[in-house]
Picture 1 (cartoon, rainbow, N blue to C red):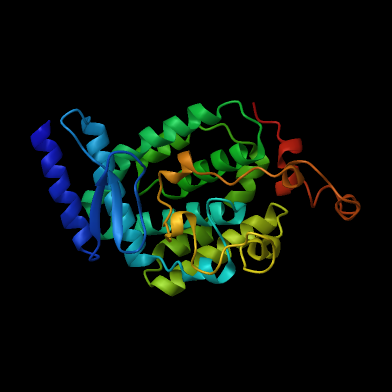
Picture 2 (picture 1 turned 120 degrees about the horizontal axis):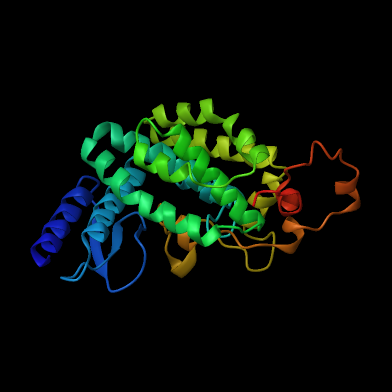
Length: 287
């Protein structure tokens, strides 16, 4: 197994070299990169074959972000993917885009991702099973939808995603955006492709009843105490969220967004507000 681990470390460095990225192996932590360096958990003689495959796939995924994603749009809009529901939706959509592009260019990644990612998807399914929390419903819905759209590329991922229990209203709403997600998966240009996924995420957020202008306002300096300056994120680094962040980092749950309503909210027609982000918890009937 040690020889395998060394081979994986060589693979990782070679893959990162495609984007002139450095690789740093850590004793703990999840895969991520800050624009210059990819951080990965250090493989050992005890690292399982599944974890080694996941490490290679994660590296290719981070390299794909470097090649195809333009995170300047998030800085411009003041969106932090670790705290914003809009940012979380964008992260899922952008991940889908870069994975599709990477798989088209490198069949080896296609196989690695399709073999390793179902483990993550199964773990998320177990952790959110039976939960009626709004963010868990959203996570399950987005994953099932993405797996459906990407099934021709990642059939094993679709097999895992098909087991997710998702409310039909939410899934049908997301399915109405499937043609646009497929369009995003075809756009190789950094700026144009990222703009497409951001607008798609924004429209999904609006369809769910969210107000993107409020999300964008939160992260801009001067709007609220403690607002981040442009380009600043956790730990002083611009951390690019990776696919594994779906399991480890989710937007914080705010009481106002989850259940409270105002007089203005009450004036809206219930059918229009049925799947509003702030009311999703109250309308969910999924077991």
